[in-house]
Length: 316
Image (cartoon, rainbow, N blue to C red; front, side):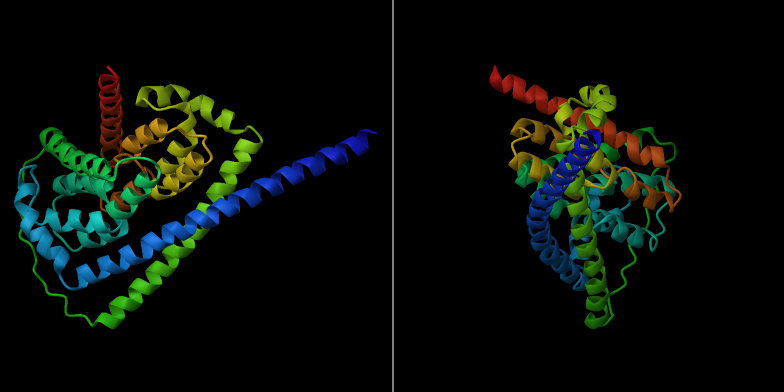
């Protein structure tokens, strides 16, 4: 009898796993298609803007603003690049510029706050936050953090000239490189989004999410976030906002996350996400990892509690 009961339980567990995977893939494919429809055209548009020198033109106009936070005019090129692309592109640009370590560190933190703005803002809008507000939070946050670090980091401002080398390469090799990069990006999105969906469904199905939530409960309270957002917070801080947002879309559509909970989380991860891979890329340039991480966490804490204060006074 025990053997029969054991086989029955195994079959039941297997069925629950199959059901979870089936539901996860159904949502995962839907979310993946939406992400790819957004990512591919935006990426190609940035390729054209960069190739025809439009990003450099925008950077040239905005350069005086950067001097207000202790950064050379050339910093505009780097931040504009980050707003339209990812941290890999930023590191590639930084390696070609002679930016001192102090200014480079400040600029790196700004880029970690404001990078990939178009795609990530679209994801946050889909999960219930205002796109305009998210853009303001990230851009204002980037300059606030730069202003603060310029005050507290030892050393003084050093200006450097912008190296105005024209892009003389043929468009075909540039397009080929982009095609290879976007192919790997597509693969990464397909694999990671669907794996995350499966993991999330399994954790919920077998009530394992509670074991994940408990150790982080005090930290979530400190950040002003709901315990329901713990898994999403972990994903966003380890893999990035885009992947955390992909799971958040699923959670909000399933009704497991309220609009307020997702909005508060968005205010946090807007300025503090991807705390592993992206900062470590800057560490290869000899920037301090702790400076790249902790100021963003403090800024995220500030923005969430400011948002909660705003909600409180609106109710009053």
